[in-house]
Length: 113
Length: 115
Picture 1 (tube, chains in turn cyan, green):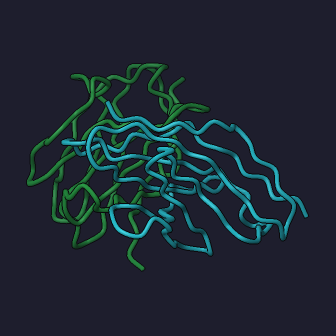
Picture 2 (cartoon, chains in turn red, brown):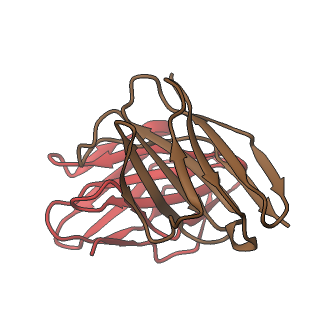
């Protein structure tokens, strides 16, 4: 069965510093991986996805993610964090042969001014 | 940019009552979904819907739950007799196709509180 893991419940980073939010996956077949962000009292906003091709995927708000097949990882990154990036981030994988996404447990990002 | 919308944003109900959660998917999308997130827990898939039929459902989606597309724009989730454990944030999502790499776009959610 497909799964994703987000090993960190919370990540703290100073404003202006680079940030990384980690995600590892376990899939059979080709991975279809997604990152979503959830701001307080808001829904899940799509950031980016990996389907195939270039291992570095660029998305919304300056975020990017690096797909690493050998390490089965899909870490979310941003070169310079903003206070407004503080939110809950979810990694997800599309379950093979089904319609559903399987979500990780989420990582709370706190960017400190 | 088109968005998925959901109403109400917060619903409070008594145990045993019926609730209907409403969603308006993105207009040219054909596949619709419901997910839920119990406070502090993972987002979980409930059901997918296409061409006026359920295409897939999870074990959470038991006989107390039903979905409907009553007209050309709305997509609803009905819980017939709510239980305390149904308290959660319910998210509607839609996608243009059912392709593995197609993105599901989520609404802002309805927070359901069952007392």
